Image (tube, rainbow, N blue to C red; front, side, top):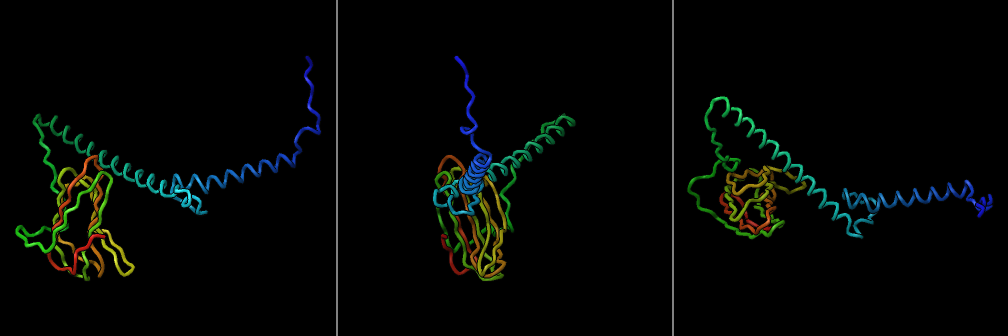
Length: 216
């Protein structure tokens, strides 16, 4: 059997090859901008990802990535603290007992308080909720919240009149209490999310200076 060479007329010309290459490159760019960026980074300049539901997927991935990085940082700090405690224990030949740190608060709430409002919310795994107080600039509201059945991530913040502020954030917390001082007139309060695998019950009590408590 003899191998035959293809005729030059059967081979694509340089112009055809260049055109095919440009078309392939154009398709790749469209896929990158319209599909990959929305799905992976929630960046959707063409609006294709929003129509296909890819942008929401990208937002979820970005949120999970940020939370994973924050969890890793917290674990690293915890390991460093345990390493220091181990060194102290070895040097002094004594047992070092670690006492859990109580929940942080912006200011101590009164020991005995007559609360104006109370809200109880059950959060399923992955579910979040937001409750805020309508406050005027300079008003002070006392609060306390606690979680039964697990812990939550929280963000104490405010917004109104085109302004926004974050007062405090926490991860894996079971309770918090303090005094919320409104930096400006608007809505000030909390967002909680249950990142555990079981439902939790959140109980919030508030008092002091504010117009009303509302679930957003």
